[in-house]
Length: 365
Ligand SMILES: *[C@@H]1O[C@H](CO)[C@@H](O)[C@H](O)[C@H]1NC(C)=O
Image (cartoon, rainbow, N blue to C red):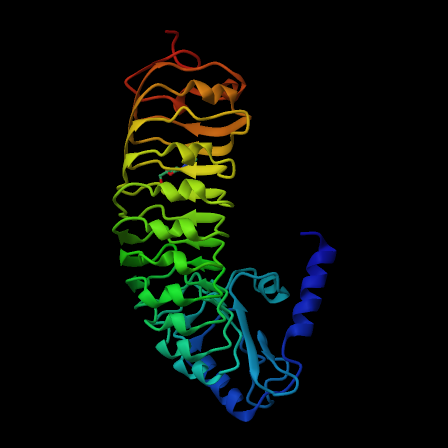
């Protein structure tokens, strides 16, 4: 980042942090929140002193007129000079105290990348009706996602990634009418993705990868008009890939790799002009690779490796505008590899471990 930008960021965060005092009851709740945490290296809580009313408390913002706390923004990886001085990223242990639920005007709660914060997401958090951002990524939080999470009607960002959260994706999650960004990746979630997941009509990113989710991919996902990025990889999902996923208007990244998906690859997944990153590797997909590529096909990445695909490498692939990374290895493909500019830069590894493929970059037929 250019230094003037870093300067601007620091200036901005200084302006945004609590220059105003907050109400005595909010101050008590903040002190209880602090008391349940331990941050040994940076001193992020040094400014949270009992001697004043939240003025210039690091990471805290209060509303100037009401004196109510609106933001808690504590990131363990940040450009703040505090981190540079300590020469390390943040580390914190302890738990998130349910006392924060008394901060009922809270709009942003970010307690991210502290690596060691454990305990559960307090269930009472679902009563914070002003909450727009709940970001607890990169801790050691366990237990279930609160069952009533769907009460948070203003929530736009729910990020609980990289924790140890277990249990099911709560059924109420589909009621988060404002949700744009959902990241539950790298946890221990089990059970099925709610069938009516497609009710999340504002969603643009849905990352549920690296869990133990089972059942099939809800067909209703195809109704999420704004969905650009869907990652369900590294789960235990079964059944076929819903045809609807190939008809989504703005979907550009689709990662379904490392599941137990079966059935054939629907042609519209490969002919959809918007999907530029498609990873279906390590499933049980069968049938042939649809021969539906053309001069508008533009894939930064197309990985179909480790499936049971048979037949030929589609001839139409040679007409594609661009294929950055192609992996068709570990299938049962046969026949000659087409020629053409998309293939010029590809290496043998893209085609290896098939039944009887031949031609450049493999041995001549
Ligand atoms: C696709 O997914 C597989 C399996 O999860 C992974 O090993 C591979 O690196 C991914 N492909 C690319 C090109 O990222």
